[in-house]
Length: 106
Image (cartoon, rainbow, N blue to C red):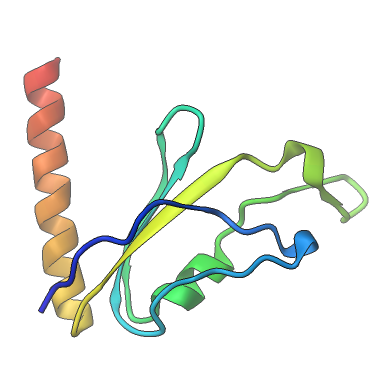
């Protein structure tokens, strides 16, 4: 069973104490650049919250410290599913639709 997509949310910045709001279970996530809408990452996973929290979205300086100035402005949305198999099926369907749209637009 596939639920609907959440609204787009600003990707949290840990240094500001912000948190990710996502299902702790199987589903799909999509992360995009807020300014352009270009895709940053997309996936069908067992645990959406964990996958989003593990994304590398901050830049690091040569000295190993995070450089908050270079961090991109991202936003994300999620879609919960009943199983990872359902998530993969829905993701493949979305990828197929996106490819069809882009080939028709070219």
